[in-house]
Structure formats: C-alpha cells, structure tokens
Length: 362
Image (tube, rainbow, N blue to C red; front, side, top):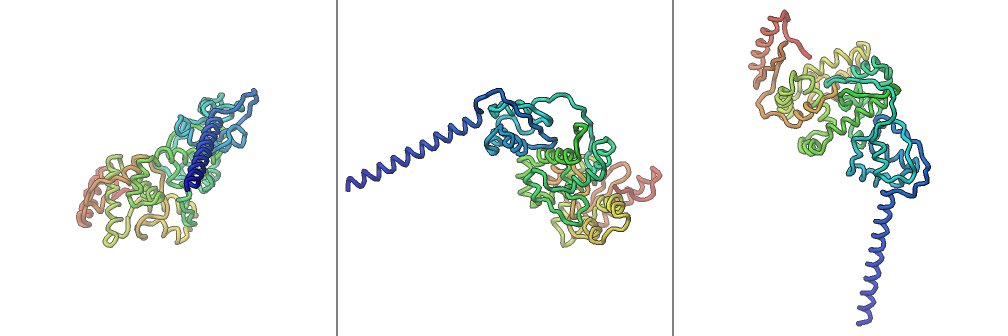
C-alpha cells in the first residue's frame, strides 16, 4: 500500500517537473522571440502601406522573416508604444532585431517623400470626400467610392457592417473626418484604410464600446444615428438635445414610429437622386426616407465626428419629440405637435427677417 502511494507521489512529482520544464522552455522561447536573434548585418527592405494597423504590420514582418509570432508582436506592440504611432513608407530593417528595435524603427520618420494634405470635414459624406480626394490629385472620385464600398480591410469590426444592396455607400459613417497627410502616390484604398484606422482609434475607445453595449444600439445603428445627429445640429451643445429627440422617438415607436429627419431627405435629393440620374429605385428611397420608414435609415448619411458619437450615446434627458431650426441656427424644441407648429412659425418669422420664405433644411 505504501509502495503504491510512493509511486503516485513520484508520478505526480515527475508531471510537475515536466510542467515546470515546459513553462521554463516557453518563457525562454518568448524571450528569445522578443529579444531577437543573432545579428549578421543582413538587412531586409519592408514597405508599410498607408492605413496599415498593427495586425497588418505584424504579418508583413513575419512574411519578411523578421519575427516569428504575429500574436506576440501585437501584444508587445500594444504595451510598448507601437500601436497608433507607426509610420508608413519604405524601411530597411536588420534581421535579428528585437521587437523593440523593430517598433522604434517603424515609428521613426522615413526619408522625405512628397505629401498631400487632405481635409475632410465632419458631416461630409463619401461623395464629398471622393470629390476632395480627386481635387487633391490623389485618386479619381470613382476610385475613392469603390474603395469606400469595399469591406476587405483589416479591421475585425467590419464584420458588423452590412452590405445591403440598397445602401448607397457601404462604409458611409465609418470614414472618419479629419485633416490627413498622404504620400502623393497614395491610392484610394490607402486613404480609406487610414480613415478606418482613425475611426477605430478615435471612436471605438474602450469607454465608447462599454457605453455602446449598454445603449441597445449595434455598432452600425450607432454610426447611422450619429450621422443624423451630426447633420441636424448647429453646434456641439445642441447635439445632446437633438440626440434626445431621436432617442425619445425610438423609445416611443407606438406614437412616433418615424424619425422624420429632414437631413435624410436632403441626402436623398442631393446625393441619392443624382447618383441614380433621378431614377431612384423605390427600394432605395424607402431605405433612406425617414418620413416614410419606421426607425433608422438603412445606412449613415454622413461621417460624424467624436462629439456626435458621444451625444448619440449620452443624450440630454428631455421630454422633446420635435425640433425646428431657423436660419440663425437657433433650435426650437417641443414636446407636443401643437408646440412644434408654434415653433415653426417662430422660425419662419426669424427667417423672414433675412429674406427667406418658410423654413430652411439641412
């Protein structure tokens, strides 16, 4: 009996030793991977494309034989100052370099190449951005729109973006508006990939993702909602009241099933109809017209900034279901339709002082 107990203890001890040995080997393997190998002076040229995130860079480095484990590199990059600081361009890297040496090299400014500034304001849609990119000489409008309708970029969250045939531009709302600097030979895909990376960095923060989870919105619904708030608001301050109106309507669909946002109709008149040469399929009209459909439109109508995204998640607590804006950008809010009609007259009075008959939308 004692002999059996001894054998069991011995077997357990052997297993423990094997586990410890495997852990030690694993630690040394990880350290060896992170610290790099023996340097022989051999260099490898690597090109990092504009818009590349850490995952794409890790794959590029592995394909070049500079690292052996993309997952470990991504984890190291996240905790050692790489993420969000990588440059793009041509780099000459030494084989055997440590992770930190590779990150330092890829975060440093490369040799001078001609750059082009591209300013894409908050509230612009893909058609406006395409025109600006073309005017900057970076690509044609058609190339930009094709890139904005592609979904094969290296971002996991793109799996949450629908590709419904009635959407005018698949990535509308995700094309983050900012002033960018691109190499003169950048492609349309470089531009869009950079915008998506900026969206991920500026909008998909941990704080926002937690708030989104509690909001009841999907990612795409949040983007659509924020685009409407952006276009309907005359100031950042008003975004939180405008957001409250649409939240209240979405929460009381039995009485207010439709958002009735003028900006969605403006989008139809100004961009959808010209795109279809004034022969818009009824299904597309129905997909965007919030005076005719219940709830949100099928896709975003613009690309919002961080303030509109924040207001969409954190609206003011109000009883309002209506609002109207005058030409001086004053917002008039109402709880009942009768109050709303009175506010319309107030807005018309202000507009008349500026020689404008009726209301101005958009």
